Length: 250
Image 1 (cartoon, rainbow, N blue to C red):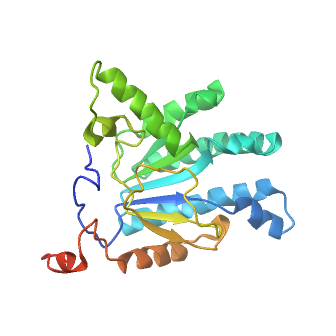
Image 2: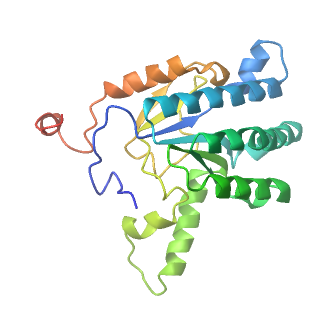
Image 3: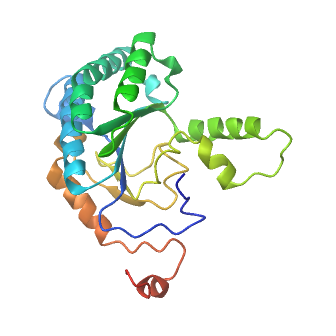
C-alpha cells in the first residue's frame, strides 16, 4: 500500500517513478494531414509503443495512459466503434510483446460497458502479465476521476458498516489504482491545459507538464523533455524551500 502525498512526504527522485499521460491530439493530427480521425488513433498506438520502451529504458516503474474517458462516449458512434476495435487489435498485437519484456498490464475503469469479448481479452491480458515486474502499464478505459472516487467511497462504506468518520487511509485501498504510487509527473499532449477528470485524487501533488505536440508525434525525445522539466521542479509537498534544501539528499 503506497502512502498518500497529503499524509506523507514522498522520496524525491531524479526520474519519475510514475508518469501519467493524457494522450491528446490524435484526431487533430489526422485532420491536419487530411486523413480520417481514426488514422490518428492508429498512429497514436505506435506512439504508445515508443513511450513504453522509453520508460523501460529510463527506469520508470509505472506508466498510466488515459485511453478512453467516461465522457468519450459522447463522441460520434462511428469513432467510438473504431476506438473499441482498435483496443481489441492492440491487445491482440501487444500483450505477448509486453509479457516477453516483463511488463505488467492493468486496465482501469468501469469495464462493464464494454462488450463481453473485450472484457474477456482484458482479463486474460491482466492474468498473463500479472507477475511481471519491469514496468506496470495502466490503461484507463471508460475511466473518470469522479467515478473512481465515488466507487471507492461506496466500497469503503460497505466495508465499514456503522462507521461515520472516515479517513484517507480508509478510502485509499478502494481506489482503482491502489496498486500504484501517486504519479510524480503528469503529461498532457495536444496543447490543452486541463486535467479532464483524470486521476483527480491521485494528482494532488503531481508535477504538471503540458505540450502542444500531438500525441502521435510524442517521441522518446519529447518524453525526455518532460522528464527534464520535472527534474528542474522543487517538490515541496507543503514545506518551505529552505526545508527542502536542508535535507541531506536535496
